[in-house]
Image (cartoon, rainbow, N blue to C red):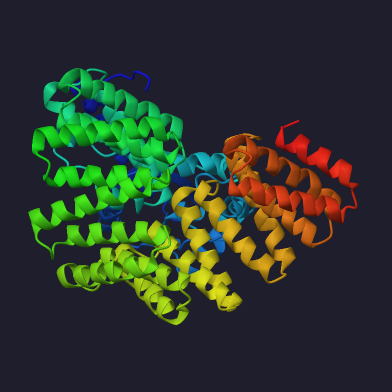
Length: 580
């Protein structure tokens, strides 16, 4: 993080003076422009401040019409004109353009249409004011330059700067809520946290230290949601170094930061280093808190997750059973923590094919969560989803669908219809519908999941790639190749632009697109893609990995279809495996 001037009392006084001047200028604009058209932009990132200002101006000038744009509107002028009709308001305030201008997209149909509609706005014989966030004004300048130049005024309204002391009184982040923020809200939160950390400085006071460490962990979590793994890693390493230096390596706060870093390392396949941090955290917690403390149960769970990923199932199971026993002893056998532990153990058993052992644990976790948390709690939805997945694997599709639909409804009601968790539920249901050959409904549901992830994470996020691939595979399985191909190509383009041409995540979209080209008899076009996929799989996973072996067989089949001689097939496969 680069250095920036700290907020001072004098600086806040200048901000207040500037805001008062903008308020006075805004009032004058409304008065002077009365009865004639003018175009203004009011920039405000704080919705509460925006709404309070609009309420104040509406009270001062009766007759202001407020147009709230629905999400995904392309024709902003036509929507506004339809809302205003034949009336002549004192002014028109247009809100929520952000819902139609996604931050991370180069395709901005709403702004292109707005740019072409410039002269139409003169039909409104009154001031027209667009209230919008700072990032949206930047996009407007870039994608609607003619409309931008048409403006008469621009105003900026900012909330009174919160002091670092005020921020320290906030509760610690709830990461479920953080994940549920919209894409734009996440961007605002990133900016807010970065500013706080700059103000706190590289050596925060003892009073601020705990809060600063919490902000660093939250900011790293947001970076991770945006796939900014390098920045997240650097920030967590800084936080861990700060905690070790100021608190000591065996402080409970320090090992908590280390656990955050370990989670990121595990997600980015740096498993050896992640394991080192997790084992240290568990060892410290055992020594300082006792072997049966609830914090020890948490670290047992975390370490078990990593061990499961590295196929050390026996040790993972032992840790999960130990964690469950600790929670039962500390909180009672009917505590929600116990339901969480039961579910984790059941998930591991399911992953290792022990369905008969896993199912009763899942059902026990579900009943316990319903009893203690209520039948409409998000944790219940998680348990429903996990049990439904097991039922799918054991071919009990009807019961699985009932549970999936119930889980979806719970999350829509409790988290909101556009929450990332809802996208997960929709994706799972879509795959079930595909399996039961209800393709039209599956397509609709999976496209909704895709739209939610695009809105929350950005159009180029790795989760969007997963959604695109799932949707494309469904269409390919139904021989709807024309619908599948652009989805595969978009997924491949995202990964190439984000990861570099030889990144391991390229292998799957390359293989998928190649298989479609092969299925549509475009063998010559498919061959270099399949060859490249094989090289990347072998380089990243090894020649004996099941994925590498599968793509190797696919490549041989493709070469045979091209009628390549056997000795040349052997040479081409060898060359691909060796990365030549």
